[in-house]
Amino acid sequence: MSIVDMNIGEKAKVVDIHAQKDLKLRLQSLGLTRGADIEVRGFAIGKQNVELLVDDTLVGLRQTEMRLIEID
Image (cartoon, rainbow, N blue to C red):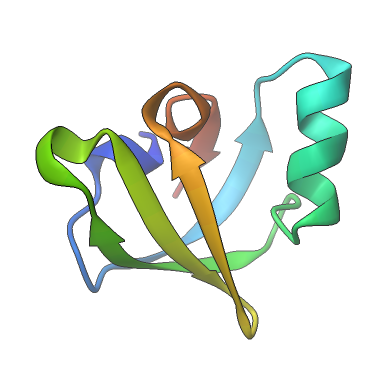
């Protein structure tokens, strides 16, 4: 399951990030690491973008990036 499968207000835990090294490091610098708790705050129309709460930080991701993050 990935972030794109979630609904607004749902919470989940990051299981793994299936991205190339550069993108994976960028996501990790934003707090999206294995075991991190996330909450979906909102989606753009068609789920093209998402706003996530990671710890106390709001993070915006594109749909292509959302699909690379495995959650539980």
